[in-house]
Length: 194
Image 1 (tube, rainbow, N blue to C red):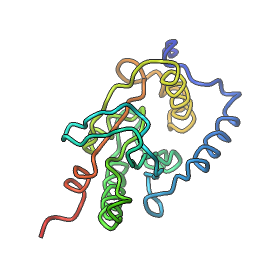
Image 2 (cartoon, rainbow, N blue to C red):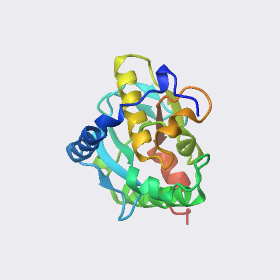
Image 3 (tube, rainbow, N blue to C red):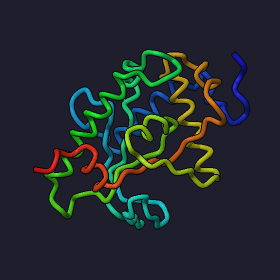
């Protein structure tokens, strides 16, 4: 395997225990809760922090709008990933079930608590794209570089192939923002219209 290039680097192994603690504290601080027991996805309820934008289906997002930030449960994902080169069917099926449960939660939410959209930042844009999320390149800068480094470090820690995972794939291993509007989530994963 070829060593990762400068942009594929992750934290050295000696920092793994520190990053494990950072990951646990970060999930606790953000109050990330699983969509349902045994879920692949967790939810952080937050306000949108990016610049004003319009999603592909026409949904506007303005700073402060209510959004649900989605997070993968890395331990659960690791248990579902079978082959190192493609998403296994099991991970995709669990993600679909999680999104159906999320759609049910949105449906019963009071209108003033309903999010405008769901999204997050991930290296796993191929899975989110298959699930119907729009994938958006992030603006380069110090924050994006730090998040890329942190997410690559998590990938190196949790992927079945370990650090070898960093040298696979096409192109640069960079995180993308992924979004799906609440309307699109309900259209795709909500109950069929009566």
